[in-house]
Image 1: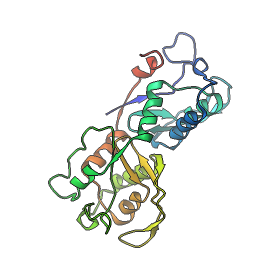
Image 2: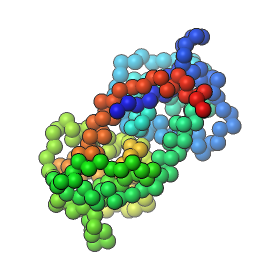
Image 3: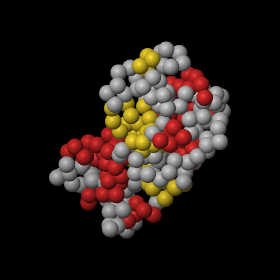
Image 4: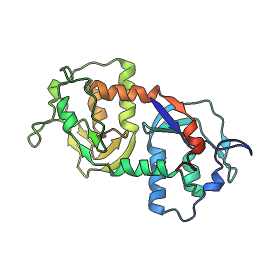
Length: 248
């Protein structure tokens, strides 16, 4: 997997990287601007680097940039939200369109039903390419008897894999709120908040899914775990960012 880096700015004339001051948009729609800012701040932390604080190219404020965030397609440092919130630096239209597409995407649970038994023959079945997000982590109940039964899921994790998966499930970008009230865990009865919907751009799930993995060792399909590991281990593409504002 290759992630496109965004939000890395030029230090001096002659560099191939963009200058943020050239992309300040004082007319940027406030709702869309806030959506982009929140998306940048909420996304999954894929790494902590050794980068020193860096002065903002516009106002000179020292900005921490040691955290790297990703949404499964792009990657950026923790200073990027400042440019959006403080200065209205509008990011490339392809990236903004990607964010709006993820947040507004339809959701489909058919793939999740097909991989109901993690130990079964379809455990490694990858979801089909789709504009819809594939819902995961829904469990059978009286209203939805065709959803996966918790008892059919495998148990047991490699400790490192489990830690990474739980962190991923808890911190990926929030794309909405189902409005559902807290509900008891089907295995231990603990009241769980599950109204927040999160996504990595391919899958989406409720906040309570992390509980089932962390507390009860419920395994997820190999395609889900594989995508998480691929994002963590992804290579970085710098080429796109150099021309992102001029492409198209």
